[in-house]
Amino acid sequence: IDLPQDTFYENETLRIDCQFPQPNLNQDYRWYKDNQLLLPNNRVEIRKDAINDSLVIHQLQLSDAGVYELKNSKNILRTPPIRILPA
Image 1 (cartoon, one colour):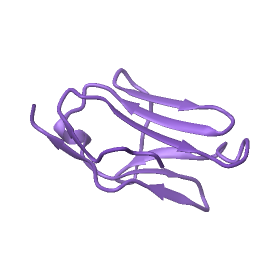
Image 2 (tube, rainbow, N blue to C red; image 1 turned 120 degrees about the vertical axis):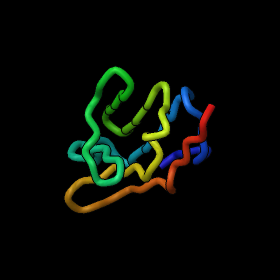
Image 3 (cartoon, one colour; image 1 turned 135 degrees about the horizontal axis):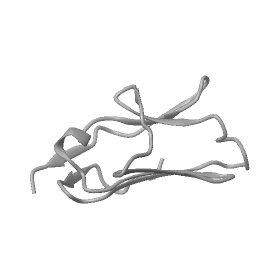
Image 4 (tube, rainbow, N blue to C red; image 1 turned 90 degrees about the vertical axis):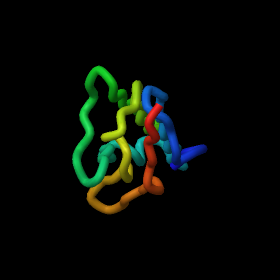
């Protein structure tokens, strides 16, 4: 998981990237925050291609703080705790 920083301010954008070593290894991986499945919405963007998985959260809110995971039934790729500070 590529995460250049773990502390953000409200209204910033969080982007987490994960590149897999071979094509299509990531087909059954899903993004979670604090063990809750993330679904795309007006602030959450999930991008996937043959070797990359990306999670983008726009206009961060304090409630976006937590641990993010990219996981399937066999593997879990986890970020350190993400902190969101008031703007």
